[in-house]
Image (tube, rainbow, N blue to C red; front, side, top):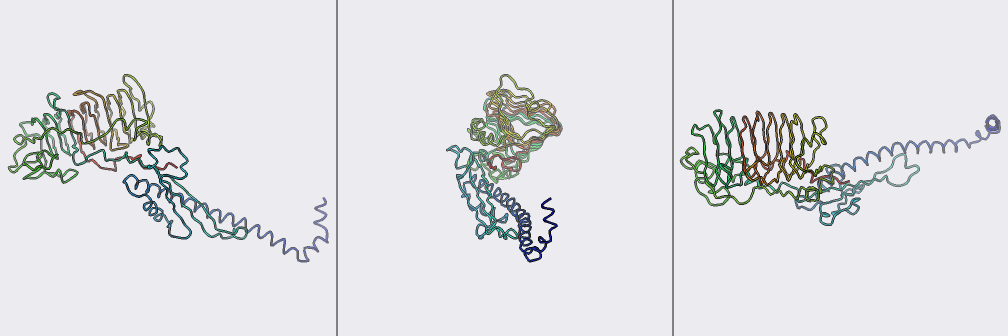
Length: 458
């Protein structure tokens, strides 16, 4: 009531009329302008924070990629920041690059400190309305940490030597490489350290790229196999045309024979394609690297995309039980110390690298799989000799990536209608008996791989 009476008091209004109202209104106006400035300049600052964080993330990824390729990270980080609107040379912006990071926020093991790079991006701008009550620039700082493991790259693949079909065994009987399907297409060449049998059925087969063996080969007398070795695969090293070519396909000695038609362009049965046995695989995947504490496993585990199973006997339908969301598999590395059976997993997609100390069996229709890392799809280290370490079957599938069984056989059999493998089959032995199958080996095709070697730690 006192306040109401004061408001109704004539002396109160006389005071206002005396000029003090201007001061009160002025103070109120300053407050209103300050509030408006807070809204406007606060919004501007939030937008700048978003832009600086995006630029810092891009710079950290660029710096990590430079680390992966043995280059100095700072110039690439600065270039990426500038590309995103923040030039280190301008007075309002600064970009700092640290490897190892100065404020990592996570524990860094000594052996991998050189894998991390930190980018700190600072930016400032002049205030507008908020300048009435705040003197100084509006500033924001964004930071990002990029990670690269130099051990995770495609350098494990010697693209000049790899073939679409490769058998290391000299003794598997009767043929380390045994191909007898119908309507087949194989591009990328073939090699056997022992005998080779290529006997496609009546529908025939086409084989593109260099062919070599160490002990002899058998080709059907009806000439159902169409060999097109005069094709460059991956590298001019494999360019096989009429005239001289590499004697063993793996040495510098030139001689008519290996993997080419020769001067006479005779049909392959009369051209031996002979080469000495090759001692080393064209890929150097190490199963220890894919363990959870290995060079590959540690990085992927830190990213939260490493799935490990300790088991005995066979693990049936592991993916269906644990890592399947509708028709999408969880991307990542799957590692098991037992035999793996993935059965009737139809119409499922995913980028996976499946590694096992046991055997791997895959059966399904309509699968669309790509490699998660190292261009590697399946890796079995099972010591099976001339028996199956990896077995594929199913229709209308597309399997992308390397298939590696250094101590056992890779077999594709059963119904394989309209199935494709965009990768290489590299094992102790390889047997293919399916029909309407296409195998294309293009080592180094980076678009197939989801590379975990480059990522943002923060």
